[in-house]
Amino acid sequence: MRVRFAPSPTGLLHVGNARTALFNWLLARGGGGTFVLRIEDTDVERSSRESEQGILEDLRWLGLDWDEGPDTGGPHGPYRQSERLALYRSYASELIEQGHAYYCFCPAEQLEADRRAALEAGRPPQYSGRCRDLPPSAVADRLALGHPAVVRFRVPQGRAVTFQDLVRGTVQFETEVIGDPVLVRSDGHPAYNFAVVVDDALMEITHVVRGEDHISNTPRQVLIYEALRFTPPIFAHLALVLGPDHTPLSKRHGATSVSEFRNRGYLPEALVNYLALLGWSPGGGDEVLPAQELARRFALEDVGHSAAVFDVEKLAWVNRHYLRAADPGRLADLALPHFVSAGFVQRDSAEARAYVASVVPLASGSVDRIEQVPSRLAFLFAFEPALAARRADVQEVLNEIGARDVIAALARELAASPRLDRDLFRAAAGRVKDATGRKGKHLFHPIRVALTGEAGGPELDLAVPAIDAGAELPPASGVAPISGCRERAARFAEWLDTNQ
Ligand code: GLU
Picture 1 (cartoon, protein in one colour):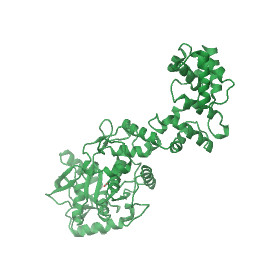
Picture 2 (cartoon, rainbow, N blue to C red):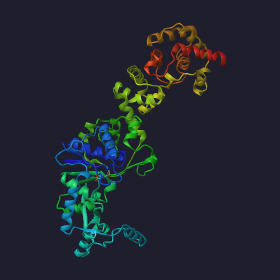
Picture 3 (cartoon, rainbow, N blue to C red):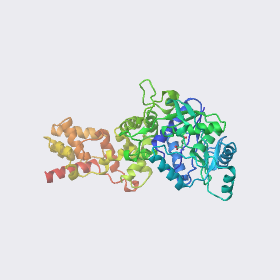
């Protein structure tokens, strides 16, 4: 089995295309097949190397490795269409010689006028066939005079083209509805429908798995396969990925490119796992499975033919699962840039990294994505009693009977205390309890407010040592200044004294 992913490098990798790449990859990896990456860069104006690099990087990040491709090479290269122009030229000449293709000199304005006339008359806007039967001498003359020409495929009339689609079953098109497609543009570059056939055939692709948006191209391609006496591959057209309003997933729906999801702090294994569930189910009631297991279970026959809706909530659910399972050091590396953009880390240093690594686990179990970690830990860096007291939930805690006594006792208790680790904190809280007679939430809610400025957050057993470890860091560490528990309790008690 040989499959391929054939992106056009005209922008960022869209998650819908990433799903197509993934299904090809699952097929290859599950069945001992070969996964080929081919860059379809014949649209010179819209293609760029920068986009190609971005797509390769995104695929690597997702872990969708390829066996043959523009960077790795392979026995069927080159793998960039722009490097295969001579091949297309020679097959186009063959088709012209055999009468399967012809030169068309119709100027763009003429084609546009034909198109409009067809639409007005209620006919499908397809090529009129004006140049189909030009006498060979007229063609030779015009070419000799340098008239711009495209090469068109001569679609046989009065036929049905049928192909088997592994997702959609038997698909049939009448050739009457297919206008003669352009094979080679006037600038000498091949059109998609032509290059894709030459490449899939020469690269010995056995299964073409791609988006349903290409299904109307497939009959044209089948006819070109026939004319070139190539055997067509097996086709499978995947239903499109839609947004919540059931229109194709686009910018209007929010993030659509793999790099955006990456920048927001989704883990690649989560995105891969979620994309696999768009139109397919691993069976057995399982949803969260590693890629190798997904590949082992994957079968094109089980892919559904109705469109799949991209559900960000479900992606977040899958991501939470992988965040909980991820190695803390890895999460810290991923979180660091977000700490930098939040201003919590001002300079990358070994100490800053170590501190971030020590605090990330406080938040990574309760966020949807890594991007949200710094705001969950904002209490470490921003502590201001006046601001805290403006929050309704904090105010509610402060209004509880005895809350102020707890905070005053805490401030006294910590006044001469060293920095707190978990045990020292527990001992100090025990003494505040003894001094005030408050316990349970009547003890810990005010303590939390006084030490974090928030009414909720990570367990105090973890948050308090994190605050005091941060307070010990020298300015040269690059971590934004953190005030310690001793200072916090004192300031909060003082603020309550003077303000309420
Ligand atoms: N370059 C085409 C695209 O990105 C590939 C279509 C195909 O797989 O045949 O849509």
